[in-house]
Length: 494
Image (cartoon, rainbow, N blue to C red; front, side, top):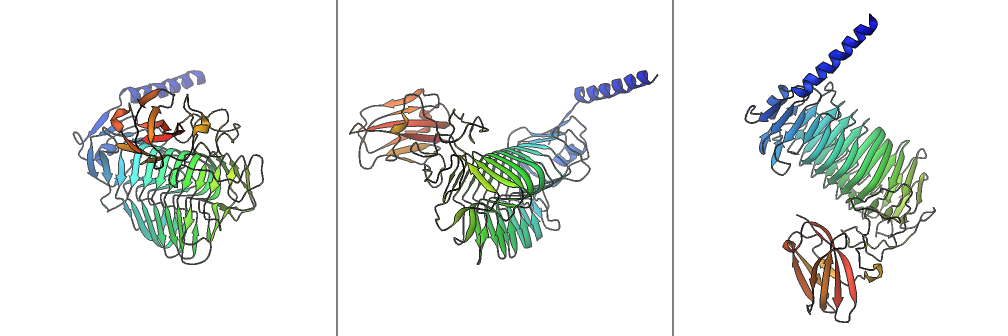
């Protein structure tokens, strides 16, 4: 009898699930429902809310239904959910119980405002764990007594953010600020192919984490993430220009933390790149932490800083370099490193203390003459870099892998040739002021020759995007009038 009852219940569950999947509906906005909120309110598990390109002035509260897909018929360049500065843009209240079968894809989420509540003007997740992909979260603002995550705020969430840009958000308070771009509390988030840029923390008191603030997380994961040009302003304390971690176990792979700014009227600032507090275990692999700076050179740990004597911070194949020589790059007793380039040095197998030789002050790819090329360890290293370029058997230190195209020798890379702008969108120029270019060849990443020009006899040449099969990374080999060969990378972005 019990067996028959169990079979009946199992068949009922299977048939119900099959019914939901096979009877899933597409709810069209604005053809069937004039607003996204109306469509979501009428959706059931398995339904897709399909939104046509356009701008929708809405403040959305997600219904207590799991497994809804909110999908743009276009993409984030032409489909916008605008909070109209009247409230946050998307809110998942406690009780939605969303998991990663709940998906938001293809939108720009902007102009959200949070005042009476301190949390998340762009997106606020409470006990909800959706997949958010191909989304831009920009120009949102929290202004209150305290501010927690102007772009995104999460609590008890295991959400995945994939191919997401969190940028130009403002957290402004009269007391404390936490996380200009992203705030995460008790949340095991996964960030993949994410850029967190140009976010601002501004307060007359304390500001922590210009790009990201994470607390009480048991497994916070970042892969292929750029945290750049975020700004932190405070009077009494400014910690973590790029990232603030507290009581967190974090894994950071192929992460760029660069050009983040700390401001304090006087006294010492802490953690230009990363500040780590509490009992945290942080593993950083193949990352570049560079050029993080402040209103003065009084930054303790311009790369990584921690007060804690608990947990551990482990750096592998990582570059920490700031040209402001009065600042120490790492500060804290629990920081260890192997196969890393750290200004000022740090004991450990394979570590070096040498100028990393970036392409420029804003381009953190490595020149061929860099001591970081082929000096990392393959043990535990990712198979590709932050841009998806495959790493070889002797990986480079840092977030970017130096690629040598077929037919070009590494010793031909000499920093005498100027390429600008690089990356370029329409035209790139190759200049050799002290010599003339007699010939040049351009190769793709496989070593296939794309362009070959002879008898050039000019100091500068201009090359247009329409000569290339697609945007991406290419290599140019230039011969001068003395038959010297110079080679470097050029990038076209759409």
